[in-house]
Image (cartoon, rainbow, N blue to C red; front, side, top):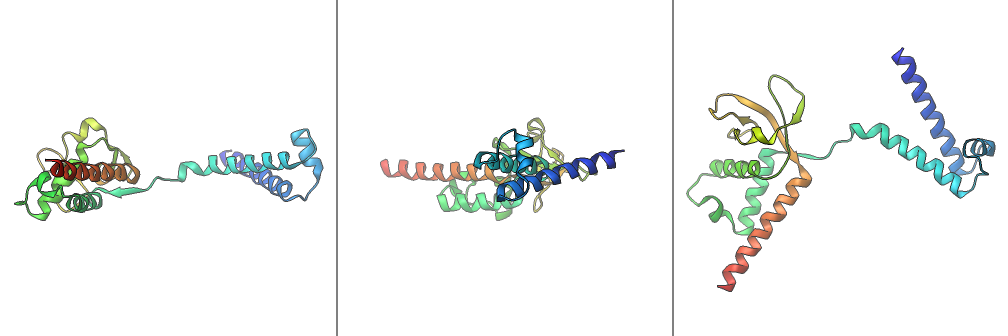
Length: 188
């Protein structure tokens, strides 16, 4: 039953796209447009058909489009490099830490930001949004994209990612803090 419904639905969408393309390109029976729109086909009728075809395609494919995501370890590496370039490295975590400790610090600072994170909660493979209330009690595992519980024994979320757009905003704020710190040092 569902297959029949899906087939009929897809068939109607295919037919609507075919009619829209034919009318937009200016060939095919003009009676189609007159019957569907109730007017003689003109540039407005063609534009309406093209708009309806595009709206149908977007509504069908939008659940499958994903926003670009970035692994938390890659984000921490880029944030670390940005902090170094902005002159914030010594202020943020001191100079006596190892590079691994500095990356972990950058991961913790990312977790403290107002950024939405997603991850897989073992043993499941489905990626889900990590609630902000849980982020307060999670710590990054060294050298991976996993978040551990407070004890450090259990992986709570694996393959943790964040939105690339939100990360760009974070880097912008980080660079701005570096510029402001340099300007304050000049003004003293």
